[in-house]
Length: 305
Image (tube, rainbow, N blue to C red):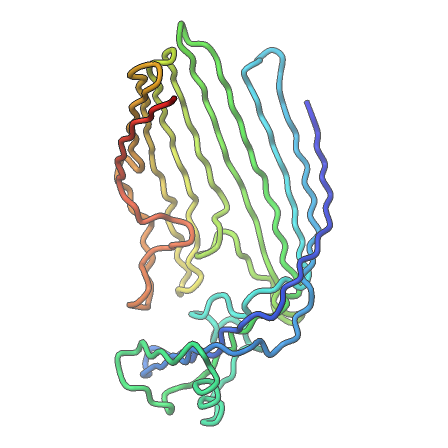
């Protein structure tokens, strides 16, 4: 058994960062317009600092010589972390955490300044001509220093190999559990990140089994689990389903120097969990966590010399 404590202090310094400025979000009953430009960062950014602590417990029992088990706990606390002020624009008008970054009922001059100053251009996704009288708010999506962000979790890596008759079998498991939260400003409430849409899920896992018959044949199968995330942009909130896929790989040793391999990813052609997005120009799944690729078959020949 081994223990590996790893305290760490780190500092990250970011230079001038362009800021994504100004998006007007209109209630559903109104015609809407989106102001999208890029301006130099209007806030003097402070260095980003983090304190992290990691401990690993390794188990290698003599009674099971083929077993290797590592359990790692980690904790990271950021101060003044640099990120965009508004992470989720769809709830910016209703979430009190974003209140200080929202300009309600902007003046005509404020609207014109946003459009004229941005180098990224003006984009109108409403399907109707832009009318400044329909703009009810400007969201200042600047890069800022958050008050704090906290992340902690557990990683588990396990491998167990043993002989199975004249062959060998190896079982593997990689799993992680994650919790994270952040506070945007001293007056803002703590916001949960992990487990919400477009943020990492609480749980991930990949279990595998590999069977080897000498050097002539290898068969591998893997079960992948990506936990569901909560859609906090909807009212009421919607709880998404996890994504479960299976991969399979076979390697056949044709000769001493030539191998033929075939693999199938997502063998059951699972789709990513559906996200009922209100925006017609946004894909209807969480592209941060889930892959849209269905069943994927590949064949390869490897020659060694």
